[in-house]
Structures are given as structure tokens and as C-alpha cells.
Length: 287
Image (cartoon, one colour):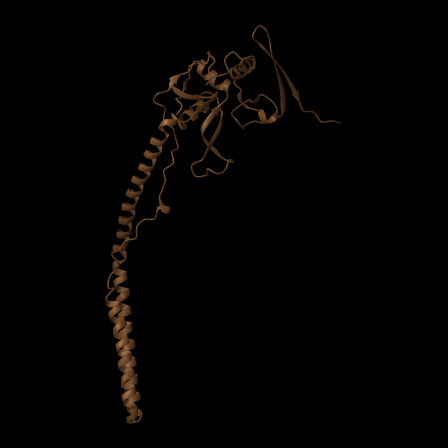
């Protein structure tokens, strides 16, 4: 049986499969009021939980399709314990992700090690070729210049050779990739967002016939009037949703939601014998 959690008069459905069953099998739509995990800062597209109208929740409970439960309220004294537990889980997740990131980087380093070695060998060979070409050029110049400039050119040649040797030595000192793996920054931590809410362990059944803090609708004339009309239309096969933004009580569709739209104002008049008389007002153009 499906479970509907009731808190302060609001009936919520947290399971995606339950929402699908309500809409497809029972013709009860409700409306989404939760933010999407990947888009929490917008309200153009909403997700779980599904908010049911009081009439929808009562009808489902009356026909035995769902169980209304009153969820326990969190104890403020346990707030610090819950926060400490959350931080501990987050730190554990960060450590696990750090290990996985280090393993991924090491695997990537092993894949690129051969290419890195080839690149370093080519760089060293180029340095040796440049050094040999420089030495041969200096030798040819020393044979054409006067003897008094020989000492200066030999000093320059020795300096260039020493510089090339230092570069070659520095290159050979880094013959392989660095073994130091940078730690995973905390800004890259992946945070898991819940997409469903489990049924509370200490939830207690709620009786919709008795007025309570979670169900203040019982016995109210306005609720009884709306419920009688909602139930009558639902039993006739109509699909209903809230119409507060249009100034009415319900939006009534002859079929599945959004398949047929017709602007018609429906006046509902309950009778003493329990029947409902409907008066339909349709838009007419003025000639």
C-alpha cells in the first residue's frame, strides 16, 4: 500500500513509483513542489515530493489506496548529533574520493609514461645536436681569426659547452614523471543528493476522520463541501487539479491532464440529498 506523509495539513508523496501509480492508475495528479537535485535554485521545473490536495488525500485514504501517516517531528536536542554525523560522513566520503582520484591519476601517469620518455629522449637528442653544431661553428671561426683571439673564443666555447651540459644534466635528472600526486582539493568533492525519502521508522497512522495538528480539515464545512464535489467529479472519470491561481476551486479535465483544454466555468451546487447539480457557463463572442 502506498504511504502519504501528512505534516501540518500538507499531504506529501516522496516516492517516484508511488507518484506514477497515483497518476496512471488512480487519476490523482497533485503537484510537484520540490526542487530538482541538479537545479535547486529554480522553480520552472519541480520534482519530488508530490503535494496532494486535502480532498485527494482523503479520497485515497477512504478507498483504501493509501495509508496516511503522521511523521515524527525532529527533536532540536538531536540537531548537534545529526550535524556531527553528517560532517563525519562527508569527511569519510572525501577520503574515499581522494584515494580514487589518486588511483586514477596514477593509472593515467602509467599510460603516458612511454610518451613522456620518448619526448624527453627527443629533447635530449636535440640539445646534443645543437651543442655539436655550436662547437663545430666555433672551431671553424677559430681557424680564420688571429691567434690573439683564440683564448677568448675557447673561453666562450667552454662556457657554452658547460651551459649545454647543465641543461642536459637537468633534463636527465627528470627522466620520468613526478611521483608526487597532488591531493584532491575539497572544492572538487562530490556531494551526494538524495532523490527519495524513506518512510519514517516511527511514523504513526493518521485518522482523517479526527481533527488534529497534522489534519485540521476534519469537520470543517468548507472541506466537506469541496470533498463532496471532488469525489463526485472523480467518480465520473474527470481529472482534477487545484485552480487557486484562476480564482476557482478545481480545474476539471475530461481526460488525462493536458490532453483537452476547454474554457468552461462550472458552478457546482450540492443538494441536501447528497447529489450535486452542475451549471456550465461557456464563453460566447459578442456580435
